[in-house]
Image 1 (cartoon, rainbow, N blue to C red):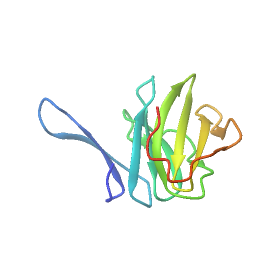
Image 2 (cartoon, rainbow, N blue to C red):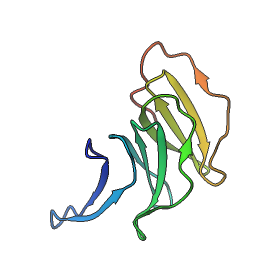
Image 3 (tube, rainbow, N blue to C red):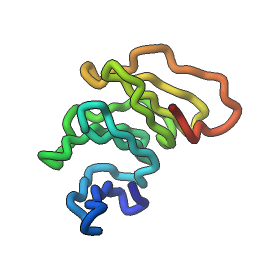
Image 4 (cartoon, rainbow, N blue to C red):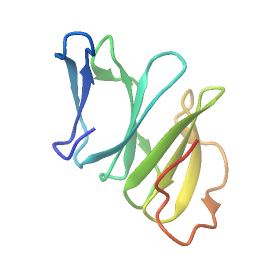
Length: 116
């Protein structure tokens, strides 16, 4: 992910960029990979996107619910993703329903910068 608002998938054997995913309106700060190979991205545009790398398209409705930059992501199993935010909160998302599964987790006194 980059400040140019894109995600690039690189071939580590050739050193070539195989895919460039576009769709965020802010810097891409966090990335993760789901068990089925889809890529999850979090951005300064306050959103999370789930990408199908075979079609190069955002696979599902954009996940909306954070009130600040998404700064951390982690696949937590059972089709769920944890996301951390600049506003000091964590949300657990169901990638099948595109909904936040739990009440927002509150307790950090600073940005959430890493999850897993």
